Image 1: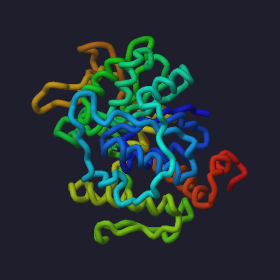
Image 2: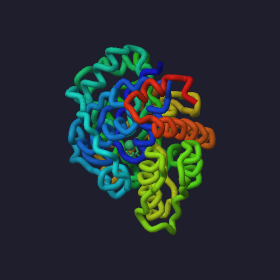
Image 3: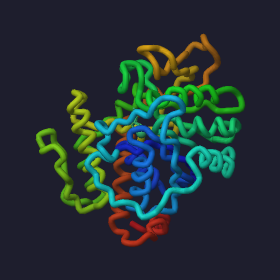
Length: 356
Ligand code: RIB
Ligand code: CA
């Protein structure tokens, strides 16, 4: 089993990433850290708990992070992800509670329980991980791999002209995490920046393939001429909520002249965490601007060792078609199983290879 710790600010694309992780029978999601970002931390936590319960996976512990970044005031983006962070989806409220262990301690405990084996992936601000490293500076050396969705190096930012959302929410945390990695003892994280993640653009046609893979009916193809907020009537519960979530994301990108599409930053990052060979990377020293009037939150990549040794590997290329083939097959197949399971025993069904 691949042991993985997932730190997110769920979020629409974080939701797709979570479903992908739950769908992977070879992955043990040791824990989920809820970090404030797209929406406040209590909403992130509720979303994580709700998706897990919907999928029969209340065995996965959810940990609550700080309500605020290390120093900055909290910035959220309900206009991008919806009032509750999952677009138009109305997830059934979870009946289970989060763990009493907070997100930072959960990072520490998970890495101590699986030293040299645990893969960490962060698809939200780095607040929880930075807090964990402040509490236990030896944490980075215990991780087998760290993948971060964040940063923008040679493309326009999506939060300011020079900054990407996850870094912009908590620049101090990002700076502290990058400073903690690199060198002999601690392998450099793989960074998945907007430069690459914006090429992982889900279209309505991909949703059609996903619904078909799940055996969901009717197969729906959202369209920019649809009434805004049109709700899905798909009979597959996972597909129904996913379509409602992603339609909001389609409408947001369309309204910002980026096309009727959805950038799947976070599922891509978790796929890289599980299969780093799907990306080409370049070594670089990454630092974060903290004081620039116009550039605060900018990630600066030194690819020529002018300012120090590399502390990161920046993902620069991938086979996007192969990414979508994997995503659709994996999440579609999982949605099919979830829809057929009417009991919390889905965990066994997932691991029972006899299930067609
Ligand atoms: O900039 C994109 C990132 O910010 C994604 O992780 C998205 O979910 C938001 O957190
Ligand atoms: Ca995210």
